[in-house]
Length: 225
Image 1: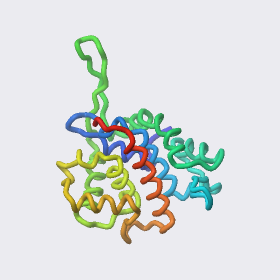
Image 2: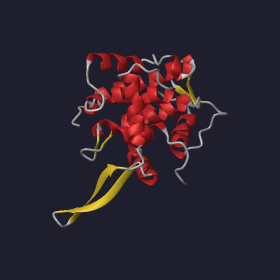
Image 3: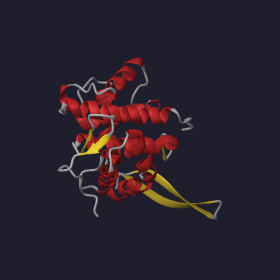
Image 4: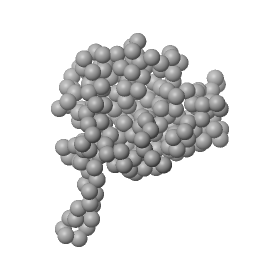
C-alpha cells in the first residue's frame, strides 16, 4: 500500500503529538486510547459508524465501509456486534502507534534515523520532516483555539482529542495555555464546533461522545509525559 492518499485522523493526531524539540511523542502512556479515539472519530466523521438506539453502543453502517486498512480493521471489529466505545478503544488502540508512525515516516512527515548509544545499542531517533505538514496542522488547530476561527470538522476533532488527552499544555510555545484556550478546547470536546465545521449535528454529537469516552479512559491512567 502507498501512502499518497489522505492521511487518517489518527495519523494527523500522532504527527501533532510528536514534539520536534525533544524527538518524543506527547502523552505516550495514554497514547493508545487517544489514537483509538481518533480512529473512531474518523469513522464517525465518515458516517461509517453510528450509535445503536438502545444501549449506547457503536454499530457499523453497512454501505459506508472504509477503505483505509486501519479504519477497516476497527470497522470489522465493530461489525461483529455492537460494542461500547471504551471496549473498542481497548481493543484497537494498543496496535496503532507503530504502523501509524511508519506511515508518517513513509510520507516524509517525520524522519527516522538509527543511532547507537554507548557504541552498542541501536535506537531510532525521530525528527520533523521537511514537508511542513505538522506546521500546517498546528496552525489550523491554533486558529481554532486561539484566534476564534470556526474549524473544519477534522480540525475540531484533532483539537478536541489533543485537549482530551491532557497534552495541550505541552504545546505552550505555539498555543498559549490560558483560560480562554482551555474554555475553547472544552467546547470542542463537547461538539460545539461552529458553523465552519460543516458536519451534521448527529455526527458532531457522536464524535463528541467518542472523544469524551477517550477522555474518560485517559483520566484513569496516571500521566508521566
